[in-house]
Image 1 (cartoon, rainbow, N blue to C red):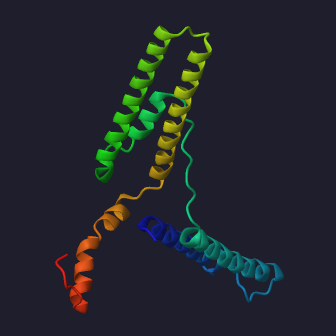
Image 2 (cartoon, rainbow, N blue to C red):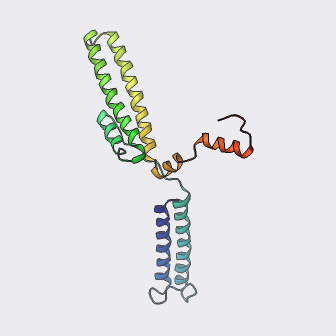
Image 3 (tube, helix red, strand yellow):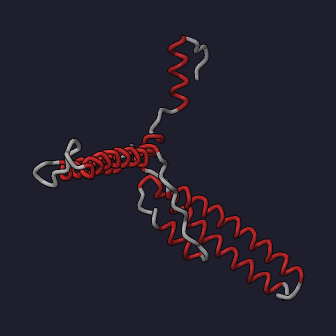
Length: 190
């Protein structure tokens, strides 16, 4: 559980407690559960029951329900993809990867425009060969941008602190050496 959810849960519990104190306190609203009026008793019991339900449901939402993954907005053009990736450019652990992705997008567009220029010089735009080459070029670009969209979807749920903990784990080779040394199985130099 992260700190934001803990603060929200604490705020929910404090809000319910304050509401119950205000309503059930004899000095404020003065609703008594053991009072003389049937309406007062029903109101007091209902308030406690609803308070319990609100705390239980809020705890479930904040502690156990997985957060929804926001979908990447509709990206249609080359500039939209660059703008979406640029949002993550300043994340320290992703800086090189985002720069590489941005470079690949610009190179892809440059190569595609060059290919279309060459096809325009070699074939007429109404020829079947031109249409086939253009269709293949379009499908490759579509697949490329589909992969970029997948990367963007994964980046929306990315947590830099978890990544640094994961990437700082022990090197597999050193853990293998330690395992061998513990069991005195190392007969060869690893």
